[in-house]
Image (tube, rainbow over all chains, first blue to last red; front, side, top):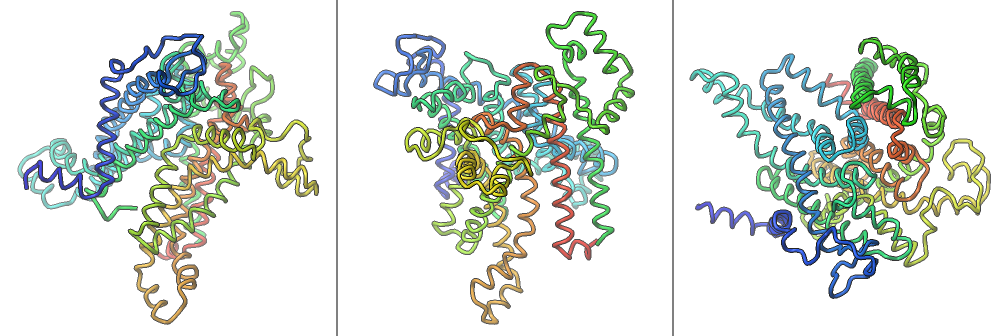
Amino acid sequence: MTTGGHLRHVLTENPVTLLATGMFVVLVLMALFGPWLVPFDPLASKASAALQAPNGTHWFGTDALGRDIFSRVVVATRLDLGIAFSAVFMSFVIGMPLGLAAGFFGGWWDRIVSRLADTIMAFPLFVLAMGIVAALGNTVGNIILATAVINLPFYIRVARAEANVRRSAGWVEAARLSGNSDWRILAMHLFPNALPPAMVQVSLNMGWAILNAAGLSFIGLGVRAPAPEWGILVAEGAAFIVSGEWWVSFFPGAMLMLAVFTFNLLGDALRDIFDPRRRT
Amino acid sequence: MWSVAFRRLLAALPNLLGVVVITFLLTRAIPGDPAAYFAGGAATQEAVEQVRRALGLDKPMLQQFFIYVGNLAQGDLGQSLTTGQPVLKELLLRLPASLEVVLLSLLLACAIALPMGVMAATRPGSWMDQLSRLITTAGVSLPTFFTGLLLAYVFYFLLGWAPSPLGRLDPVYSPPATITGLYLIDAALAGDLALWRACAGQLVLPVVTMTLFVLAPIARMTRASMIAVLSADFVRTARASGLSQTTVLVRYALRNALLPVVTTLGMVFGFMIGSSVIIEKVFGWPGVGSYAIDALTASDYAPVQGFVLTMGILFVLLNLMIDLLYVLIDPRVTIES
């Protein structure tokens, strides 16, 4: 089967996969090209146009400072996806090697790495993220760092489980006998095999990282006004909910939900492809 | 059985130690001078030096750690700069408020998610299964602050069913006499129906918000676990013996399927503690989460530390309890070890 044919089969087999992939592509396009495609400057305030309900000019309405919410929501995609992607990438790059080493070598490696993962997981993760950002300082970089730290255990566990299962496999023995060093076996042989479940984890983690970053921003950590970020946009509109101006919080929140939903669906779709037995 | 339980207890100790170590490291990881931080923004140089000596920040790291642990053992979590009260005292005062929301949400989530999971498991692949999967995935994708605000808008502003989302109790009422700290129980014990209704009304929106968020893990785990159990031999035998579907499902399958769900509840509790911080901010709930956020915004560091430590310890103890519960309810654990 050709690569194109296989891809088409995967996408059409389950309509959810197609939907998730489509939404993912839209999100990435919004993140990359958003600032050039929006009708208004996301930072331009105009007091006379404050708190307008959604209408023809302002599709999502305006906020308290007269800024166009549609533009702000679209431009925020870049920051949110950027934060989530950086955090997940950091977790992946640090967690996978640690987990692979722990699963493959066992012994002290395993003990130390597992202890690290367990200690991180001993905290309610959002609380730990709060603590890290509070300690290190209120910047976007620290949000990324905190989110990366709390996501580490997931990658460590996945890599460790995969390496553990395969460490005594025949082909690993054969690789060792052909003269491959242990590190080469880890990198060239075990890592590609651990990728499929890791990819599922990456996708689910992206959704979770976006929620985390937005949650931290909502309570005032990390991204500061006037930078557009979905969590901050919802926080800005929170005060107006009880007086009826629902659109200020609704559209950023809905966008946030769609983004997380996309990554969760994508993760499920990937899991269905790689290991249908693990479907829940 | 006791040896297994004891071993589980021992396994929790390194976790407790890890929690304490990490919290200690977080307190010393502040960029800049920790003493200046604890002394507050308006302190003079002398005051900062005094605080430094008082807190032992001029001693070597390891000694500082032992002082820290010693203080913890005496219940000294530091002093809040903004309120001037000991942190532990304030945390204990506010803990029942948070616990009330979390416990009620847990009950409600189980009451909805367990039947949903069972139903999805008995009809896998059907539209009911897909629908419940959609609902639970949507629930877990929704940020809690968004759900909270949306519910407040719909049920308070539009429909007027729910009371104003501004705290634990309408200022018109005075809180019930503190016996447990949980308003619903205290009001019930005091026999005051109007007060009970007022407390319950304030609780509805926060509890529903939190429940929506945790439905997914419980429902999914129930479904997966039930599907595994329903394909077991003893279920087939039970059916072949002519037992009714309900008996087979509830008395035979569900009891066994609940075991992994119990472990999931531990993880779910961690999510709940995390999301309670946000829910308390949205609904103005006077719990430990909003205490920590207020302190954070005011650059008052000791309460945040105390909060992280307390929640960490609570979480470890809860998981230990679930582990021990597991030893009690699953005989295979004792036999297998």
